[in-house]
Amino acid sequence: MKIDHIAIAVTDVEESAKVYQEALGVHSVEFETVESEGVKIAIIHLENGRIELMQPTNDASPIKKFLDKKGPGLHHMALETDNIESEVSRMEGCGIQFLGKIRPGSAGTKVTFIHPKSLHGVLAELCSHPK
Image (spheres, rainbow, N blue to C red):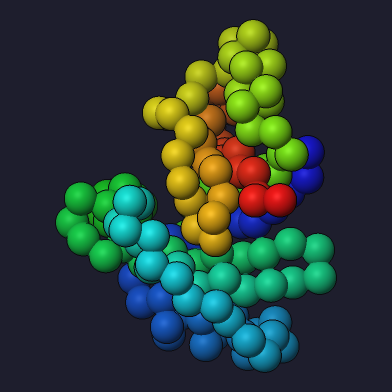
């Protein structure tokens, strides 16, 4: 496994992307809306991973609830695996709890989230990119 991305909840994804672009010296940003999660994201590619800025697109979005409760900031870390199904099975065997089933994510990925209680208060996403 390796770190795939760090996700940050923001209220304005375009404005936040400009700040990150300038601060990190990055020239391009990809924008995508993930309807199933109720978010618009800005993907900032770095040499060793990505930063994803996430803005809620509706009031039912988990990111909207996060922003209302905690304000903008670090939402989760994502870990990449080649085989998400076998990794979930392995981790469940270790007592790790998940928030829901494996589902589609951005850019054709498969994703699922690890309950923060399983990782000492840190929300983590497992993701598997299409081959």
